[in-house]
Image (cartoon, rainbow, N blue to C red):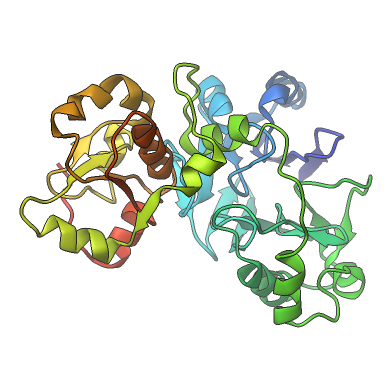
Length: 346
């Protein structure tokens, strides 16, 4: 196995390569480093088979979709990842083949709902779940300190003590640790109860990452268009959230709400389907097409996407354009399907 960290900085990108099959995956690539990654792959004579994001990043633009476009590599993320154009959605326990190698997926939510760790051979790539002598923050939307504690103590700490730990970030110049060391020495987890961990993580008071608005929402939506103005965090936080059951009841009323689905066309007719009567209006086209809704501006508009993230952005955009009765389907079509509510696929 060929294994290298490529960035030599605070944000880590890992290359895992099969020397036998001459194929590789990149984990958590940075957009500004694409040329470096392509050069390194060419130098080693490796074909890029897949690009994996361990979670939706808030502090840097992901290169996953750039690399997909340039190389044809498939994009792999957890099933709860909000972005479109993911080729393979994985869940806990899934295995990703790489020639003679096999990467096991561990779902480790807490930093974000779609967080995963990758276990291969004698090492585990821990994303932003477990850092060296630290853990990833839990104060972004969808974060949950209790879930993170469970993921660390029940999944990661269940690995052999000698397992090497390679996180997605490090701010102190560390390169690796072991599970055994983190069990003994990680000050956020060691000798803390679940309740104590939640109390600690909920009161860290960390500043937001620089340029979070320019990073997180494009990563969530895979939209890179200067014509689309992403809402502020304040605007996003004001969006009214409705659960799948609430939306279902509203659609049974007469007149019902207008359902605006902001996914891509292939998602609209894909695995998760869509709600009957939905209007397909992809997020990247929303501002240009919002005028189509103006004749019914007084109606209740409910915005829908895969996981409820892109649609929160869309709801905030519509509110900013003067639509006063806008809500979001919390959890998106993932929750709608989980509750076995009716869908259409054509």
